[in-house]
Length: 165
Image (cartoon, rainbow, N blue to C red; front, side, top):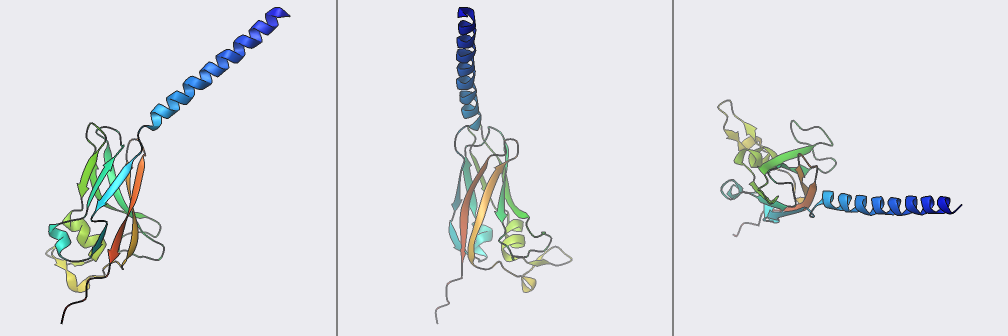
């Protein structure tokens, strides 16, 4: 009977030790919290976004990991070439050795997704065919392609300022 108690005690202690170690492993796998900062956090659509684009800074991703930045389209917002429920890729970057990244929207991304311009046969933007996205708050998410870590933030598109008379 005494040997039985020793065996049970050994199994319980071993189980507790295994549980404690596995919790530490899970905690270390999760790593630091991911963050995403958008600059500017609020803007209106203007040609100035081509010269000074919206930028994204993130942290908490795996070292040297490719990160995509996507705009989550709200229900009802239609974009040419994008199926309903899909997100739109607006930037990408590779995280540095510390898991940080910086990315900016390329001019073509700004023209295609914010202004929704048409394109001429000579591949010039056709602003006459533009259908800019409406003002609103848009969810932006950054996803690590290896780790599947996600950071999110919002970008507010406001109406353009009224012209002074």
